[in-house]
Image 1 (cartoon, rainbow, N blue to C red):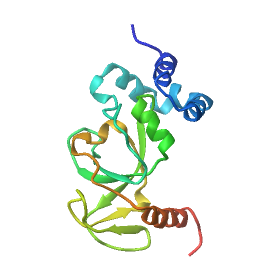
Image 2 (cartoon, rainbow, N blue to C red):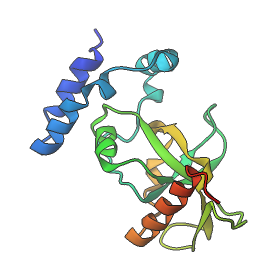
Image 3 (cartoon, rainbow, N blue to C red):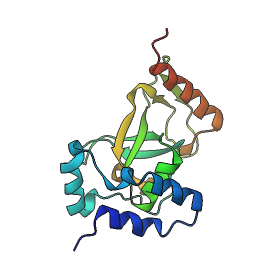
Length: 175
């Protein structure tokens, strides 16, 4: 018999030692145990298909890290680096297995420049100099991250600040 989302949630947070984070999870419980009607079908499929569940349970991920992800909704397709952009509170919930989405910014090795792109030189395990395509903010399922390849690189605080500024301009009407 399958556990309800609420049972899964409470079972997962029993493992959390950090009282402040546990209180945050409880205060935001509805995020983790409900789904909008538009996601209902996909959510029900994920409950019945083990391959659709997050493969990041137990894997620590953080805002500012770049990972490879499969961005084709049909499974086999365009593998590209993505910058994890959602906050670390939600990222910890992904690690607990109670949240399954990630806000990401894709990277491209086609260097076009412009005010909505941020260049990152090849470093660590990032195979090519690339640009973060800031105007292409996306929400992906955590199971699209290719955890076997690990973290390609991590942005500095300064780089994160620059990207924050770019994103603020995307949502602002000023020239």
